[in-house]
Image 1: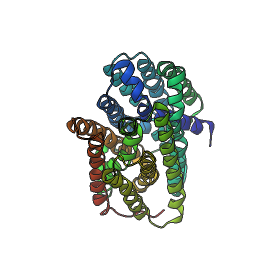
Image 2: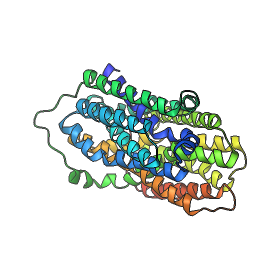
Image 3: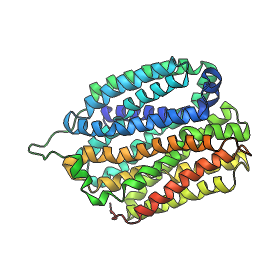
Image 4: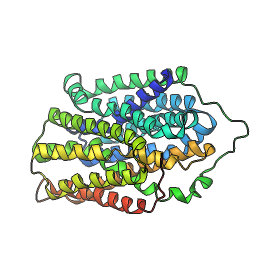
Length: 391
C-alpha cells in the first residue's frame, strides 16, 4: 500500500472512531451537559444522515475533482472543526452541531480509497481490498471503546476531543500531500444518477445495503452503552471493555468475509448466510433480555462478527458498475448503508422514548432491538431476488 492509501486508512480509523465513541461517553455527557440516551441517539443518527447525504456531492467530486482534494478538504474542515465544537459543547444542541460537522468530514475518506481501488486494481481484488480497508479502519472502533473510556476518566473528554481535532487536521494535510488521483481516461463517458438508478440489478441490493450495517453500527455506536449501564449498572470502564470486545468481533468478521469472497463461488448466498447468522443473536437479545451481563456482551459480539457483510455487499454492487459510474455508484451504495443507520438511529430514539415509562429496564431496549431485527429481515427478503455475482 502506498503512503496515500495508508493515510486514507488512518482517516477511516477516525471515521470509525467518531461514529462509535458516543457509547462510552454516555455517563459523562449525561453528567456534564445533561444529554440523555435519546439525545445521543439523535446526535448519532444525525452523524449518519449527514454522512449519507454527503455521498451524492462526494460521488460527483470523486468523478470530477478527484479523491485527493475531496478527502483532504472535507476532513480538515469537518473533522477538525467538528471535534473542536464537540470539545466546547455545553448542551445536547452543541453535540448535534459537532456530529453533523464530523459527519461531513468523514464522508469522503472510505469512498476515496474505494474509488482508487476500483480504478487502479482488478475487479476480482475489490472485495479483499475493501475488507482490508474496513478492517484497518475498524481499529477506530477499538480506540472508541476502552481507550476512550480511559481517556475520559483521566484527562477528560474535552481534552481528548481537542487532541482528536488536531489529529484530523494533520491527517487531512497528509492526504493532500501524498494521495495521487487515478489517471483519467480520454473520452470516458460522463455518468449520472439517473443512469445509475436505471440499473435494475441494483434495486434488490440497495434495501439490504440500507439495513445490514444498521444493526451492528447502531448497537456498537450507541445502544450497547446505555443498555449495559441501565440494565446491569455497568461502569464506564466496563462499557469500554464491552465495546472493545464488540469492536474486535467486527474486525474479525470483516477480515473473515474478505478471504471467503475469493474462496466461495457466490457472493449472494454468502451474504444471505451472514445476515441469517446476524439475526439469530439479535433475536436472542429480544427473547432473553437482561439475563446475564456476559451473555449479552457475547450476543453483541456475535452481531458484530456476522453483521460485517458491508464490504462484500459493496463488492456485489460494484461488480455491476461500468467505469464511468464507479464514483457515483460506490457512494450511492454507501449512502444507503450509512443513511440506513442514521434513519434507524432516529427511529430507535423515538421507539426508546415511546416505551417509557417501562415496567422493567429492559423493555425499551427490547423495542429497539425488535425494530432493527424487523428491518434486517425485510431487507434480506428483498435481497433474495437479486442477481448473483461470482468473483
